[in-house]
Amino acid sequence: MSAHEIHALSGAYAVDALDDLERARFETHLAACAECQAEVAGLQDTTLLLAGLSDTAPAPELRAKILADIKTVRPLPPVLARITPPRQRRWTNLVAAAAVLGVIGGGTAIWQNTHQPTSSTPSNVQADRIMQAADVQLFNAKVGQNASASLFRSKEIGKAVIVTRDMTAAPSGRVYELWLRDKTGSLRPAGLMTGRGNAEVVLTGDAVDATGAAVSVEPAGGSKSPTTSPIAIFDFKQST
Amino acid sequence: MSHLQPVPSGDPSPESSGVAALAGLLRRSARGDEQAFAELYDATSARVHGLVLRVVRDPAQSEEVTQEVFLQIWRTAARFDESKGSALAWMMTLAHRRAVDRVRAAEAVNRQDTTYHQSTHVVSHDSTAEAAEHSMEARRVRAALAELTPVQREALELAYFGGYTHTEVATMLDLPVGTAKTRIRDGLIRLRDAMGVGQ
Image 1 (cartoon, rainbow over the protein chains, first blue to last red):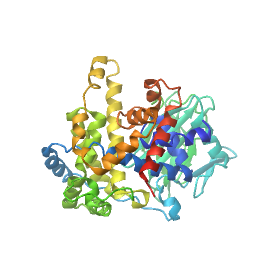
Image 2 (cartoon, helix red, strand yellow):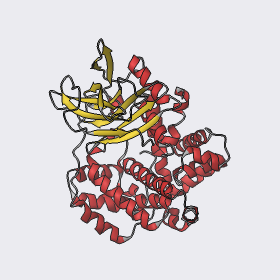
Image 3 (cartoon, one colour):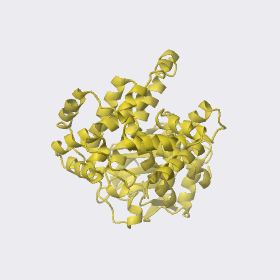
Image 4 (tube, each protein chain N blue to C red):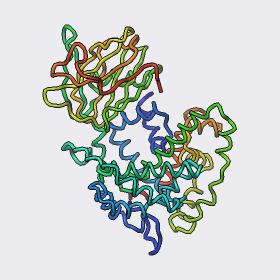
């Protein structure tokens, strides 16, 4: 899908008329496209006009029910905003500190932070190629209570990319480690990320024969096999 | 939200509560203020439920979704960020997404069961919109909608009120694949400009 075609999804996105895969692709694009951000905001405000055509009061009992319900539910804390220029604040939770994954020598993964996804890095180019591949598969998972992650895999390219949303940073001295599950069911190291906020990381290793992927919290530098239970699991048999 | 017009007093629509007031109620709700949340509910429940009912159609299921929406608003009120848009936009976007998720999930379950599928699509919603009929803004919106081309209007309504994907809309309107999304976008842009949204 070309950039031009992606732009054209803004209207359908504003009215929730995208399927899950298109939505995930578009949101990834949106994070880096100021033009689309402005357009989507305006179109979403426009949908409010449509929403105003159908006012219908719910049954009076619903009020008491909901007000009783909230007594048992704790409001979540705010997502602490990073300091970003005003223009970008509108999409704070989308504009990620992208973790750029590189591989040096004997399979040692290193990564570095950039403040904004830039489409020129090799990793992002590859991530885009995976997400736009004709045979791409999408898997979604919750990460803890508030964060979520989408994993895109293209068998043709042989790679998978993980896109995280609203992640909290890994505890100090710890990192998030990515895993690919092989046919025998064992988890193979597939790279590291700090995970703060939103990130887009291409998993190292061959994703063609993998049967799943996972994320776990590991000591800095990563582990050879998970030392804690995964906080997110993707089962490749359950494509959406 | 400069497009919102002044409304006569006594109008129970969210506009009459004031945009800033809604944001304030939302912020107090985030701090666990149940009274503020009750006021927020009173100011917005007809709008939220009206939209959910229009998309979901089944009254019992719609009440469930409305209940879920308000619980989600209560739980995630701290995530509302004024720099991203108005409180009402945040709430309605959340309500619409939830309603669409519900109809699509139901559709996945009932894909085999065509009798159920069809019967859920013949329920009329026309009577439910009566309350809004008198609102000045609703009349302006209807007039602006009438200015769209028939295909733009149908595509937009099937997507927004019907909860259909643009691909489904293309098939329903016999449009070439990939053009319904353009019609939806064109229609929204035309509506936006006619109503002066964001100006």
